[in-house]
Length: 311
Picture: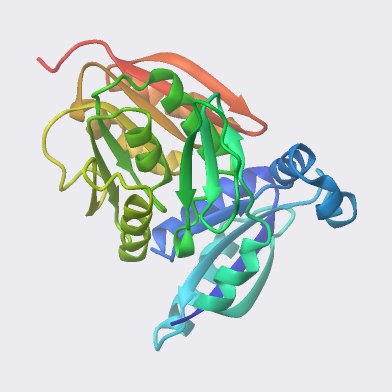
């Protein structure tokens, strides 16, 4: 299937709003290219290969991308998106570029920019086609994000990975909500989780996640479920992680709290810093005490602890 790539160039505040819009449209995933994150990653890896100073600067606008299948409904969906984007009344007005992308072309294009990256003390996120010389204690996660947009280099994913490494206890039951490529679910399994349920509403994401689970040989620990948030998941978890967007997280927080055992943790990211207070308030209203607030540039992750069970 061919896809229409929609690239929206906007400012920091606009990133969250445009992401929300794509999410409401049920598009084929959302990817955010944040110049500050790109520069940081390039500086820490291979700046001489990137020519980063010539390509991007920290003052460049962020790019929010998503993809619509090229089918009979494309024109209507694109028209609806353009009208909704205009109603956001962003200033300055975002620039929107579109182009046709075949699955195989998309995959080949981004591979040039996807390199191994170390996150935290032990986790290494490695594209399956790249070489990596492991050190003692490394937990290497081999990934092929495909059309699911989860490769570990974006700040929100890195925040979640670091917090999983810090808080996940051996044998824990973990729910990964909005799993995308399955990167957080695989990381949880490699960090010692006893059971992981990875949920995504998008069938393409579920297919990619299952492939990555198999690639990392954790299929005995990770179950991939297609569903909306935790609607189809039964039982309690010791830890729930969601790297989505602020508007979804605030609405989903009561369900996440309900799914946790007493003392369980909710790790939430995908949150622009200006909305951290809103998400924190939602956590507290759901009976979760804020244990940590962690920033990476203009992105933030929160950790909430369930202090008691439901009455």
